[in-house]
Length: 218
Image (cartoon, rainbow, N blue to C red; front, top):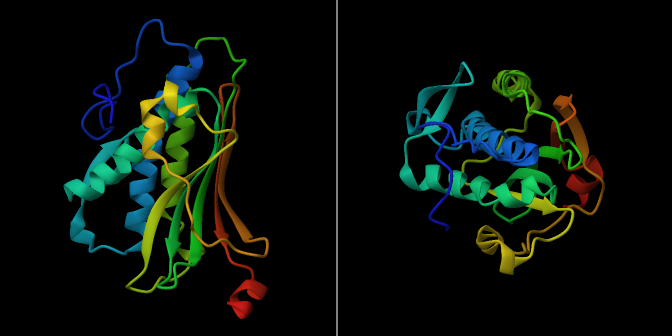
């Protein structure tokens, strides 16, 4: 990992550079948000004891922070490693995928994002954070929309790229490897959770579940 990786949003905000592009500023805010949101997803699913998390405040919302250093570092490293690609508009979706014991996906939380590459105005950080805060609030009350998972399930963070970054120009890209995860053969069932569309950033959060036909054939 590069030495200049951003700070965790739980320990302090990522440093903003005065000469940073609008896309760089939006990407920095989004990466911070994703770390918190993904931690919230993992907490929501209850695959770890509630004592594995502690309360923190982010964007003036009470959120959860993983106590275990390895869990915290996995989430932090995964999303911060996407920063250069998000800034360039290369990342289409970031998914938190939960699998059964046969390594078949049972549920996906999808963050679909679009950083406007032609946006050249000043980023109103307070407005952007206000919009993202609503995602965290909505996510915290979304458990009824989700699937009950078995105790022995596993999960991972996955990224879907519009085009692959050049490894030679981004050390962060080296930590992302192609996946051999089994895919659903039928279009999934989609449950929207929250969406926003602004000039610098478009973001959708939704759930994907296997279709009934997929479950029968599986």
